[in-house]
Every structure is written in C-alpha cells, then in structure tokens.
Length: 133
Image (tube, rainbow, N blue to C red; front, top):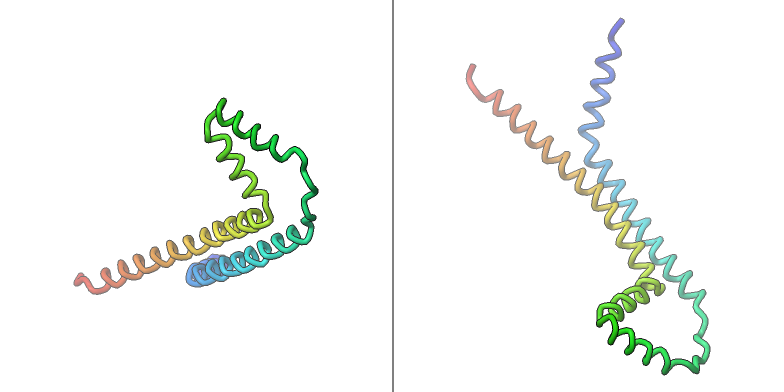
C-alpha cells in the first residue's frame, strides 16, 4: 500500500534533473519581459512629455543652487542631479531593465549552483564505484 513513496521519489528526481533548464528558461523569460517593459515605460513616458514652458525664474534656480552649494557642499547638487536623471523617462526605463536583469540573474545563478551540485554528486558517485571494495 505504500507504493506512493517511490512515485514521489521519481518525481523529485525528475525535477532535480530538469530544474536547471527550467530556472534558465524562467530567467530568460524574466529578462525578455523586463526589456520589453523597459521599452514600454520609456515610450509611454516619452509620449507624455510636453515642451517645458518658459521659466522667467531660471536665473533664480542657478543662484539658489550656488547658495545651497555654499551652505551644504557639492554633494547636494550631485544628489539632485541623480534624482533628476532617475526620474527622467530614460532613467525609469533603465531602472526597470536593471531590476529585471537582477531577478533574471538570480534564476541563472540558482541554475548554475544546481548544475555544480549535480556535477559534484555525479563525480562522487563515480568515484565510489571505481574504488575497490
């Protein structure tokens, strides 16, 4: 009556042998979806941009930047520049693409670790067979 244990063992063995390929496939799908999402974010954000209106206080911005730099140093202007770059359409698209590459890299790394473990276990079992008893 307890033949179910053998079935589950077979299923687990099957999953272990095909797990790296499945992880690589998932990583590839995540990477492709991320690139497509990044392109879509860029195009949608680019379409939503309107020409900037004339700003009569543009000189005030430069003088305010100088005053902030004098009070707090150059780091404030640098981080403000990073903030503007990350909120631009290109910055948002790069962020989406980088996040998808990070998640896809996780799947590729797990697949390589499982492959290495399988290679080690195969080498260990072949060493055990070749040793005389």
